[in-house]
Structures are given as C-alpha cells and as structure tokens.
Length: 310
View 1 (cartoon, helix red, strand yellow):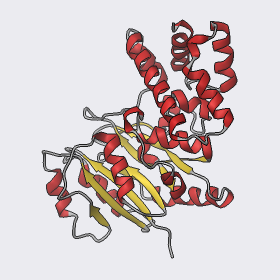
View 2: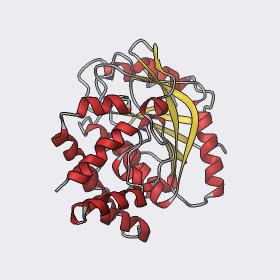
View 3: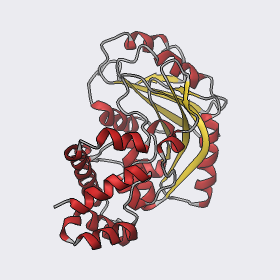
C-alpha cells in the first residue's frame, strides 16, 4: 500500500492565486497525496473557490462549517492535528508547485527514514522566487538569501533556514508536536526544524520544486542577506525584539521537551543567559555552539547585537 501524503493548505483571502495553486497540486506526478484545506476566515471569493473543488475526492475542506480565525501558526497546527497520514506537507495559497515536488520530497524522506528508524525527520527543498506574474526573480532562494539548508541546532535557534511551503515531515515529528503552547512559537516550520535538528534528521533536496510567488500580500517574503541588513540598519530596537522572541522560543522548547539531549540544553542555557558573560566569552561561545546566522551581512549585524546587548 502506498504511503499517504497529507498536503495541508491554510487559506485566507486567497482568491487571486488559489485556483492556480490547487491545480498545480492536482497535476503532481505522484498521486499518493490528499489535500486538506482549512480556511482562516476569508471574506473574499476564497470560499466559493473551495466549494468548486469539493467534488474532487482527494480534496477535503476540514472546517467548512466551523469557521474561525487562528492566524497562520494556529491554522497550520490545527490542520496538522486534524489529519492522519504517513507524511505531511505544508502549502501556501499563492505559489505554484512544480510537477515533481511531491515525488522528489517523498523519495528523499524515505531514504533518510530507512536509515534513521523512529526518528523525527524533516525534508525541505529549494525554491524559485517569482513575481506575481510568475516571472523568475531568482533561480534559487537558498543562494539568494545565503542560507544554510542543513543548519545545525545552534543556528536554528536564531535563524530559520527552511521554508514551510517546501517542507515534509514524518509521523514521528508530528507526534512530538502535540499540545504545544503556540504563544512562543515563531513559525510552524521553524519549530519543526528545531525538533528535527534536536532529535532526528533534516534532509535537503537541492532542486527547486516550487515557484515561490512574491507580491504585496506576502506575510513572509524572500530577502537577500544584504537587503535584510540595509532595511534593518535603523531598526536595531526592532531586531533586538526579534532576537528576544527567538530566545523565548528556545525557552519554550526546553519546557516542551524535558528529554532534550544535554548538549542542546547547554546551548539553549547559554543563549538565554548571554548577557551574563563577557563580550569575549559571548563571541567564543557563539562560535563554539554555532549560534550564528548565515550570510555575511546578516551575521555581522546579529553578532553586533549580541555583543552590545546589556
């Protein structure tokens, strides 16, 4: 029996691009998927579009009669808890999946899983960045952003380098994401990456499997390391707040997983108490534990923040 892949799609006022996204899923070369959709309170024609796809037995609208706004994180976690499958993929409403996306990701997952029984595993891929008309802006978001696709746990504490719409997780990883306090979780994909890097494996498919559409309504966009630095150079206070949120997430991670390996606990303890040591030791331990960002400009700005934090 073929493994069941649940594709989880959260919609919110997505009428402009939603049909194109759903059609790209329908046209996948691997057909072991089922699509589960949760709407997060749309007021445009999104609901009408969803009704048009209800005749497809592989597409399920899980909250047609129970609408509620949960926000991006809450909506995806509610989807995850409502569905049972072997593997789970996450889908944005405004992208286009290339035909081999499910097949390539699943193949990588099964190879890693065969070598790492009973471990939480996350697999992600590269993306092509496109504009609203699908004109290519970057052939590789990983290269454009200067990201490390197979980052260590230390790096994941301060920077997420997986993009949710490329992610597949296995059942073991889902099982470790029950009864979470979502208040300190920055994004669902970031949390999954932390779990996989702490307890299991992260796999990367070095191919683009998605057209990642950038437009005015994106909640999370693609920025280069240099552009990120330039747009934030006068926002030191804001980025310090973002770093504090990462520390809060790390603290929540320790509370959620009391069986966290000792070396991971040591890394988080230093990260949370970074102001308690001298600037020299801060820098030494940042390097020792790998609590660094990728991209020269992004990392330089981050280190400056840490060293001047009081």
